[in-house]
Every structure is written in C-alpha cells, then in structure tokens.
Amino acid sequence: DHVANQIAAGEVVQRPASVVKELLENSIDAGANTIKLIIKDAGKTLIQVIDNGKGMTVTDARLSFERHATSKIRSAEDLFSINTKGFRGEALASISAIAHVELKTKQDGDELGTLIKIEGSTVKHQDVTVTPKGTSLSVKNLFFNIPARRNFLKSNNVELRHIIDEFHRVALAHPNIAFVMYHNGSESFNLPTSNYRQRVVNIFGGKTNEKLVPVEEETEVLKISGFVGKPEFAKRTKNEQFFFVNDRFIKSAYLNHAINSAYEGLIKDGSYPSYFLNLTVDPKTIDINIHPTKTEIKFDDEHTLYAILRSAVKHSLGQFNI
Ligand code: ADP
Ligand code: MG
Image 1 (spheres, rainbow, N blue to C red):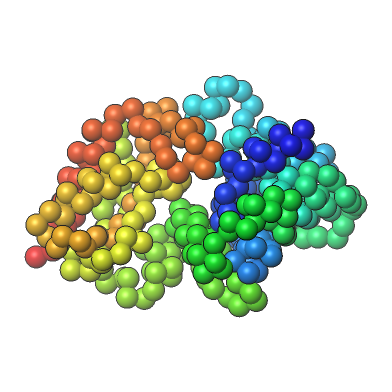
Image 2 (cartoon, helix red, strand yellow):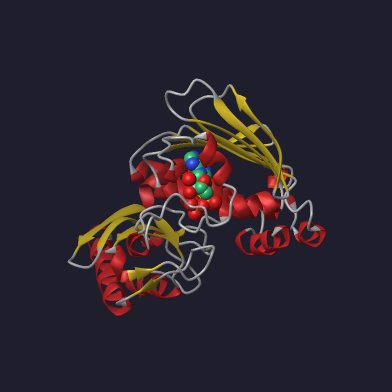
C-alpha cells in the first residue's frame, strides 16, 4: 500500500507548486476567508498553509490521509455538479506518502484540536493540541523517499516561480479571501479581501489599473466577467493570461485563440494581450475530470463559447479604444 501511495503520489505531486495548489484549494473548500502560505527554499524545505476554515474532527483528521477518503462527494451524481476544488480525495494521501507532514486542526467550539505527524504514509505521532480554529498543514522534505524526484527539482528560482504562479491563480479566483505569502521569512504578497479589479492590481502592481478594460457579458450558456488589457499595453511575455471557469483556473489554447483574434489588427505580432476572465457555465456542460492536476477542461459546445468570448472582448475594446 505504501508503494501504491508513492506511485500515485508522483502523479498528483510533480513539484512543490503542486502541493501549494492542493493545500490552498483545501483551505478554500473548508470555507476559509484568510489563508497564509509560508514557503522556505522554494518549497524544498517547507510548504505550510494555515487557514481559518471549518477545521476537522479528530476522526476526519485521521481519514483525510486515506486515499479516496474525500468528504466532498457523496454520490456519483455529485460528480456532475462539482463545486468544490477537490473531489478525488488523493492529495493528502499522496503528499503524506512522499513528505513529512504535520497537521494541526480544530473546529469551532472545540476546546482542543488535533495534531498528527506523518512521514511517508506512517503516522508517527497523534495528540490533542492547542491551536486556533482552522487548519495548519506543513509539508517538509518533499520527495525525501524518492531521491530521483528530489534531484530532478529545478533551481529555487524556477520552483518559486511555479509556486507564485499557483498562488496567483488561486488568489485571482478568490478576491473575497485574504491571502498572505511569505518566502524565507519575508512577505512576498499581502492581498486583503477586495473586488476583482483591486485583486488584479494588488498582484500585478499599481500600473495595471490603467490598462484594464472591463468585459461583461451574459448569455444563456455563458457568463463572462473580468478584464482585458488595452492593446497598447500588450507585452512580449505571456504571463498575464488567465481564464477561470467556475472559479477554477484553466488553460485553453482554443479560448486563448478567441481572445487573440479579438485583438487582430490592434496589436503587433509577437505581443500578447493581458486578460483576467471569469467564465461561468453550467457545470453539467463541462468535464474537468480529465487530469489529476485539473487545469484542462472539456466544454460540450466549444464553438459557441469561442464566438461569444471573441465578440464580448471585441465589444469591450471597441468601447474603450478610441
Ligand atoms: P479532496 O480535497 O479531494 O477531498 P484531499 O486529500 O485534498 O482530498 O483532502 C482530504 C480531506 O481532508 C478533504 O475531503 C477534507 O475533508 C479534509 N481536509 C483537507 N484539508 C482541509 C482543510 N484545510 N480544512 C478542513 N478540512 C480539510
Ligand atoms: Mg483537496
């Protein structure tokens, strides 16, 4: 079973940033409105997420490390209307198979919480503990028992970049949640609860404000809300392109193409527009269950979405770009 866990773990956890994503999403699913991310050495030494969400009972705390012991799907039907980030019940089982994990958690109204320490799927310690309401999960020595994986980790700069990318995606999808991130003891981001525009600006810097053009559209099949960048601010780098579908970051070359085509004639070849777009669709018309890392998605009717998106963006650019 330990071996099965290790193998499965490699699929869910590719690098420190994968752990960051899973832990942040669990905190969101737990209803937290304040989430703190603490990183040491680009996650190679420590990844810790502290939230003020609903916490776990002692039984749930133990169960949370069992494979497929998700608390979030009760029936096969739920699969078609997923509104939590997690649904596979794989993340904590996987992470604890390949790292040293310490969990502290407490539910509202309980006097004492639960402390569990796990190393490579083996519970080393369990006790009651004094801890605030919510959950703290710390992950140390990732891949300690898979040296090949550990050696394949990239430089701290590269791994930190991946972590920051995940942090941005999660923070953009949830402006109503306050996030803080520390790396090696210093504050990298401090994002108070805000509206969407302010969240984008808090992440990408004060100058971002003047380049954002709102996009709002609502049809029977698709609701769009968010911002695109004015054409004159298009950049040579592709690091400000964000699609969220039902609050989940996704990559879609096809929808990206829809945006680029809306800018046709407005920007030079080799420059890319910024966009921060939230799409809301009926969960029944998408399939997000095609990869454990869940950044890709299948739409029932891609062509219609493409057309609506392109025309909404063109419309916004036409209004603001004279
Ligand atoms: P999934 O999110 O797919 O259910 P995970 O392995 O990520 O699976 O988590 C397992 C379970 O542990 C969750 O279903 C949830 O009940 C519990 N859990 C994990 N993280 C938290 C948290 N931060 N707060 C409260 N409960 C949590
Ligand atoms: Mg999860």
